[in-house]
Image 1 (cartoon, rainbow, N blue to C red):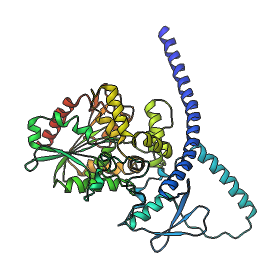
Image 2 (spheres, rainbow, N blue to C red):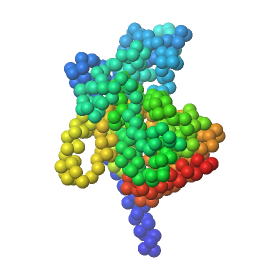
Image 3 (cartoon, one colour):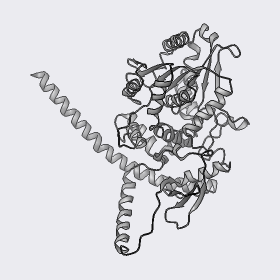
Length: 475
């Protein structure tokens, strides 16, 4: 009897908590919608005053493909069209996620309703006029159009370092080199390595996630056999952070190929990837099916998309659900939905990372390693924003095909690790991978989350990786 009452009370409390979360989330995110809208204009003015370049806030472009293969672009409210020449060798529009310019919000809904009322009025007054034939169009953010134009003629649209980015030597070390390759930290034999291992970090992180944890804990025998290669992804850590990049999947993969596979003469290799890096690992494995010996994925962000749903919009809502609770969901929602609030956070944290480094050393007495914080705050807003949308959200429609190819065409071992307490990427994502690739082994690590799946158990994880590589080599 008492147990039944307790169950009912718990159910009622859970229901009340869910309702409060929904109501509070609606209020908070309506406010954030308005705040981001205001910040949009603030940054446009600041950019114009500091960089002498004005961009119309919130403006979009309609692009129509004509018979000659040109894309005709026209801003809303303008009668004249601007022609942009695009070819498959220059850029593919499919690489750009629609979430960059299409994120439903309170402000956009109100704006759309007002536009609809205005449109209906005009339609009624002009219903007797002869309709002109229309062409199908796609919507592209005007900023993206300008970026595409700049990429095609090889220009930088912004200074190498924007006023809101950090200008320190660490963050801009890539500007002193003519190679324009990614930063790669290597360990192990240089010339006589029997096998190579590529480590790919996750979102807003760096190669230090691996080099400060796993690299010191690999056995001497492993270091005599394997050459360990940890890369800073494009836009993060010490790697280039070009402001004219759209940070698409293709750009990230191409830079890894150029900087690691070609730069170090890698022919066959193992891959270890975390979170966002899992998407890049899958893409690389699909491009180099004969070269990948094993695939180890940590917390892969794989969300199967229901039929009829927009893949990018569905994954964005799963990763960033616009809820104030749990806290990680709130942080992901702010970072994924609000471009200018996210830019403000980047301005406070990333541009002033030297101050935060100093304060943390003062507070902690320099007793802890700050490599996680360094990876989190040493990037640019353009890099993090576009990587989030064009890779995590934008590739959601491709992952089914990638996993199918790995299942059917690759014979390498696939091992998936996931922290039981991970609040960033739900555990179901790893099991989703296993459903797609039945031979994949899923290991759930108890009492560990998105970060502590490695940090804090690096010795144990290093031994596990060595066993995976050893087994793959024998097979």
